[in-house]
Length: 500
Image (cartoon, rainbow, N blue to C red; front, side, top):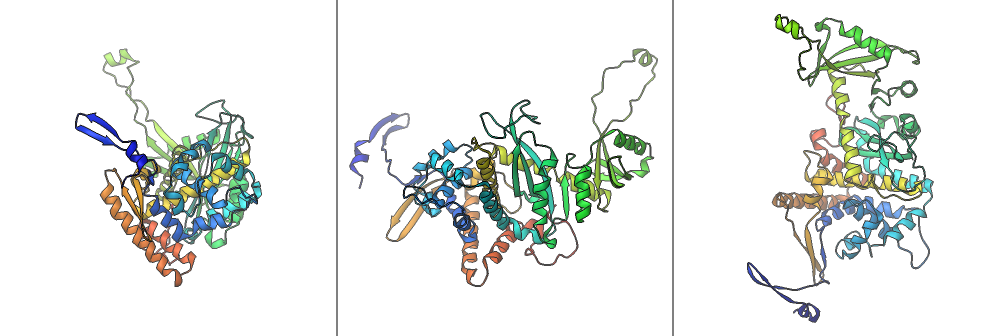
């Protein structure tokens, strides 16, 4: 039976396909992100969102103040949908379907979310979110893994604390913030992020957070390899690695003495160079610069550059049929390491580091690292870690759906999150009817169904297994392509860098 308000708003519209009767129903319980129900199940079984809310350090006493779960749930939904401004959170206030799935009573306003984060002291936020990040990735540390370090720049267009001019390749001269970030190799799992002033983008400003992250880990869980670009190949960091027994692999700046070494090695006969993969050939040597405390192993890689044939500058020689061959041009890369793996393995390990650039592109352009700006630095730091946490959760959930590859948000959201859904209640049963227009909707439906059954089996096993064991089984399923079907923490068949 139609309500009077719906019937009175009926419109008769003439179209090329005939007459269409249009009815407006503003009270219908609809949502454009109907597949969030499966992600809500993932968060419920893992218990991560519950612990995030339970351990939140802010508890407001005012009767009109929002609860922690409502604020964090609103931010979670906003970040998950790809929003980058607090003002965009207002678009979620008209969703009657998804907030109850996350245990929320309501969606809070943008001002409530900002004020709530502002009530948190920086040390409280750091301890709280770093603990949540660690619970997310800690089982992965039972396997050999590589720690990737790098820095990205966030341009600032308003007035914000610590927004200063520094190295900013995309917007020269624009004030910015520097995000010093740490990831697990090609798993694309964010370990932590430190937000610094724009003039503190140099790698040395992230050393303190890096060593705090490593030193807090038990010896058995520390990274097999620390990997970074040429900003990290300097004496202070390498000496600190050697004092702690931490293996490292960095790219080396081509200073004059390094260039002299390259020229010397290029004179070696071709047989001295070995295949390094992807068109590169490599040779190793020992080097000690003036600022270094010791001699270290360096690997020089080179690859021929395809150069467009220039117009002849020697027409007289050409007229005499004399051909002058140009010397070969090479792309040169110099690596420094204290590992003793073969050149081929070291070259591939460093090439794998390029995947961390994809993490920055995804987190800045498809998630919230490029936004959620406030005048104080503390809330920017809080939101940077919060975005990294939600990014981890979603990436791991997507890994259950598509375990053979990493799907970025730009492709995973339309496939696994978007879809019009309507809620109906009958007795004690709640039914969510989802319609997806994605081209792979049938495949998605099958995979979502499998994940739903898998997570249900994990819930049924909760009496026999601890929460940590359940999360370890989930991660083992997500990363089965790296583990070859093993459970995380079981013995390796042969020593290897599993998560390079």
